[in-house]
Length: 293
Image (cartoon, rainbow, N blue to C red; front, side, top):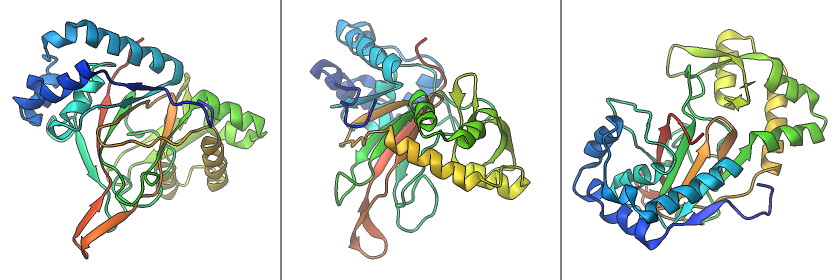
């Protein structure tokens, strides 16, 4: 999508919304049971064979193939992330697990952390889990609580790989293009002992995160000395080819984790009682291992 264009979004039909809110998977089972059922590949419900669900799935996949991301409006915020898992079935039934077979992560932004997934500070254009041997192919994000001060805070953006490279070419940013497409780099997650080495873009897929690249530079000292200049050029180009996405409570963003970078803007916090009691942006996140061909 180009800046100013309409987002690739779907307003979910009443029938699908009702199923998200009332299915046995969001009401009768605890989220942990739903996650286990999904990981075993045993999710089964008559609604998944209905005309309403098939139409929803067709629309999601059509936009996915065209734009590498889709926004779903009207998904209820139900089941502590269960509705996100159910909505994600439109793309895949294979989910990445973490921490003893959990699927859905819950993030609450905080003024008291520097953790990238929880901080109030502006994030980076990036892909997720980029130091893994095989990163997940889809990231799904659901808004639980919008930013309490302004819906314009905590905005999301998606920069598609094709658009990003075209913009860098337009800017004659040959050094940044070489960095992305031809230079072997090291990426390190500083909370784990391992890392990853290779080219950011290979076989039409990208893995990229400024912080893991910086951590790789600190640990191995092998990334280009011009790293910060490359990162700034890439950030500026990604901003110019992306459009702000604002999610209300329940809304979902499905985004390719291999053909796009995603970003989150700065957030705010409203204190009820300083320093512990506050309201802030909250989201659910999960990752999928495959996508429609």
